[in-house]
Image 1 (tube, rainbow, N blue to C red):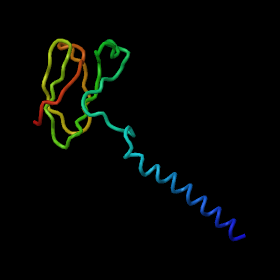
Image 2 (tube, rainbow, N blue to C red; image 1 turned 90 degrees about the vertical axis):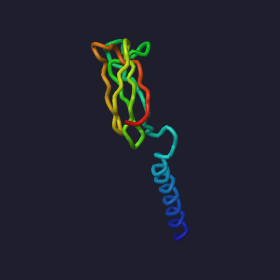
Image 3 (tube, rainbow, N blue to C red; image 1 turned 135 degrees about the vertical axis):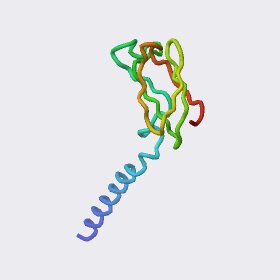
Image 4 (cartoon, rainbow, N blue to C red; image 1 turned 30 degrees about the horizontal axis):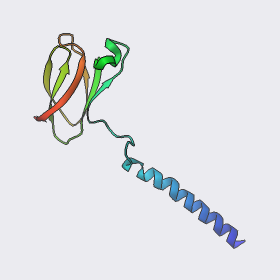
Length: 108
C-alpha cells in the first residue's frame, strides 16, 4: 500500500516539475513572445494593405534603454524623429505617402 502511494506521489511530482519547468523556461526560449526590434509594418485593409512594402500603420520598437533617433521612410521622402524605449505607433503621412520602413540612426 505504501509503495503504490509513493509511486503516485513520485509520478505527480515528476509531472508537476515538467509542466512548471516548461512554464518557467518559456520566456528564455527563442521566439517565445519575442518583441520585434525596429520597424514592423501592420497589414490593414487600406493603403496597399502592406503589399509591396507599403503600409498605412506600423510599429517601431526601440529595444534599447535610451531614446533613439530614427529615420522613417515614406513613399516620397524620409523624416527623422526621436523615439523613447518601447513601441511607437507610426502612421502614413498624406504629404509624404505610405510607410516603407524605418532605421535607427543613433541616440537622441
